[in-house]
Image 1: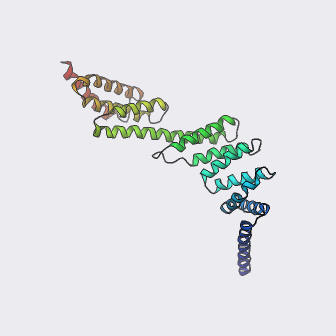
Image 2: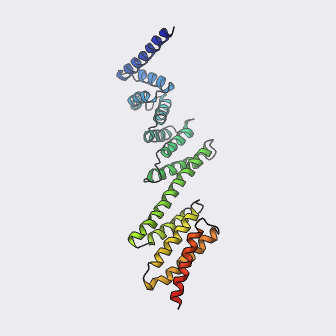
Length: 268
């Protein structure tokens, strides 16, 4: 019995392969469509795609075009080819604006872009594009059942941009010692705090802004040191006002003692 089932299974596999190969060679779009649809329903998206790609130009304007192009886009999405999926879903929404699949297609186009967003340490161009596409979806379908997921995806992407901006500012702080200039770090932390007022990294940003201003001050020429020491002291005050028991309290207080000692020298 087991042997019989194995033979039957092999026969079905070979039959399926043969049907696919015949469809690839066929000149009849209907044959290709029928086999592609069958493969799609079985979850064999890579094979289905090869047939959809062949018949797509001939299907435009035909009654079954909407269903075919939906399966075409879904096949890219299901096989994790997100660049192509984003494009095909976008084309679907433009071509079939009255489709019952419109909302889903618009969301999956945006989600495909979300899937292309790289690690925060890399270039974030795709992240910004994904946020724009998700926001377009949110604006177009404010009552969508997919709204909660769309908002969550936007939140994750914005946190990634936030982390990237913070790390860039932190890098300026690190390299300031080598270049003898902390202006870039101070400006970057200022911009970060303006751009992300609700950030979970606010305490860190305020400390490193203070530390950058402190390091800038003590390495300044005599004509600038007093003004910069006062600026650093003001940045210390901003930090402890925001978080009186900051995790950086020990380091910050040690810096403050040195600032006051330096100011005492110049007050005589």
